[in-house]
Image (cartoon, rainbow, N blue to C red; front, top):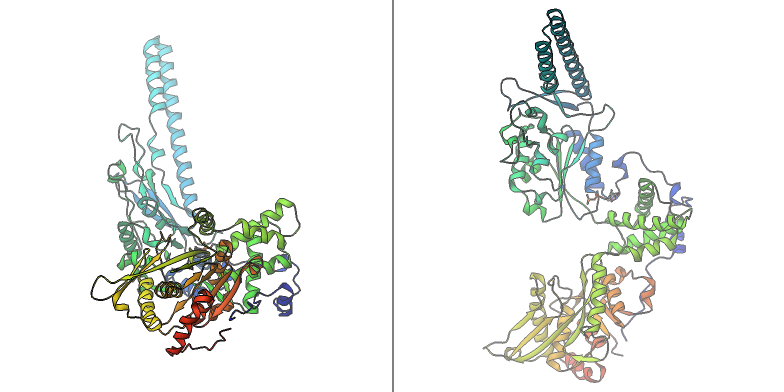
Length: 636
Ligand code: ADP
């Protein structure tokens, strides 16, 4: 047969040692690794982004970062705040405006001076109040004295009571004149990092609180109700906004104004609140903006805002994987040490545990010779493993904790896919034994790390119209549709039948989320050929692969997850493109469950999937038609 043993390309720990994975470092645990103090030096694998951030920090430029969640975008934004000079930071104060109560005055002072000023005002106000009360007390004593001398008791007491009440219940004007500290800084803290992700207008742009008592001496003075927004708190620092496209167009427009002016007045954001009448003088907000999102964030973004960032800054695409070189492996180990240190509660990882995490990083990269950079998820795995070790009271986190954490911290998609497999078994949707005509088990990936068996059915009917058509159902998206078109070219050639007088129906089963990509084209071709030629297909075989119009089997993504899903569903043999062989990083216990068959050409797929008794006639007919596969294979 054409099947080959899958080479063991996952390295065992011993082999890793042989390869001098730690570059000669005598590491026994992650506690031996030094963690750099600066955040920017802790970022791994995103060298380009780090370089841009360093440059942008010097020049105070805006940055747009596009990429998968958990690759370090907000970490880089924080790191940039650390790089900005803190000498230029300012405190912002709001003063009442005696001329126009609704237009409070804004003043800036050097960082950490604000608090002193407000305190000085408070002391002053208290002194004045004290003086006032002393005066009033003297007045009361005078009146009472006068009353005693002149025997006018009643008048004296009434007058004293009036004065006392007036003192107690009127807010002294001095107190209401103390300025409000809107933004303040400690002299030793770095430039601010403000996360404005998902803020509503008030939180982003500042607001003026509503005052239920708007007159009669009980109202809160308007300057006291002014609240700074994220843009103001970020003054002199970094404003980070993830998923930038989820901000309302109105907020994006205002954000643009703030970027252009470097100031933005604060006004009440809610129309019907008494705060809406108040509008401060312009409040400074010179921040560096870091906008982030995944690739469709670009589409949802206000075009003027995007062009502003592009015109006055940089755009960076975040990497999802890095090459598995000794140097990068070392960085990855440092990442483990960082996560342990930053968590602060979990025990350090021993050598074995570190190598197991490294192995998982290789697996999750989904690409040969690479390590994943979706590090938030990896951090999650590290913390779960560490927690398990801590619960046990272990001194170090070891391999067994990492393995247990791996099965505990599975993605939602993976858990759903398991549930789906279980349920579809109950209803016989998944067929993993026997043979069927026109039915093939394909494989698909859900989310980013979860495979599933995706059956495809084909049926051929006499054509109703003048020419035959291929009808595909199952919520196919663009690329999937095109792949069907390519497959039909191949079928014409392969079956040699006049497809003009038949309609070919192809149905993808259970694809409620739609089908994307062309990794099912091998499956579709097999199902259709089986239906046209009436040759049954083995149901214990599953397959994945893209198909060229000439019948070559081309590489696809997610091969590891697909094989694992097939094994879980009870499939015995999985056909994959040969060029994906190096991407196969399935876990050990799946190795005994499935046989993996790498192929180069559709003919090999048919050889493996069609039932032997019926296929030979067809295959020899194929050969006679001189459809030469690019690789020659031994039919035995
Ligand atoms: P994003 O903003 O891209 O969604 P984050 O910056 O919030 O991702 O990353 C979450 C966490 O994952 C970080 O706090 C850090 O612990 C870890 N992390 C992510 N990317 C990196 C990286 N490139 N280097 C080191 N740690 C990382």
